Amino acid sequence: MKLLKQSKPQCLLYAFAMILDEDPEILVQEIGHDGLEIINPLASGARKFRGHHHQELIDCCMRRGKTVTCIEVMPQLYDFGIIFTEAEAHERLQIFMNHFSGVLIGEIHALAWDHKEQRTYDPNGVIRSVDDFAIREFFIVI
Image (cartoon, rainbow, N blue to C red):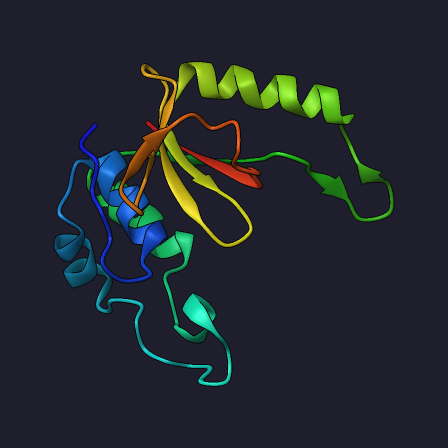
């Protein structure tokens, strides 16, 4: 996988671009916007921008013949609560991460995951382990 470094707050776009081995600007053209429209001027940092939704990037994947599956780390049922213990959820996620590459989503950041190298490709310009990233969802791209 080739590390791409974002110059603006577009981590989801860049993470999917790395997984797809695609120029982020090509994805911007396909989606029709760069995610940098200010929609909340009172917010700080990246939260003031429109950003991208993962559904927009799933469409880009599908146009390239790729399928995307979302793995929630701690899925919940409305009246029941969480359906896995923390240990079960971690083990389940690790099984998927051992076999598939994709995009890891945290609370406010996204990373590309290379299962062969067992490393993350951070759009901030760093290749590292996943140990210090709190994963909320894993979008497997096949």
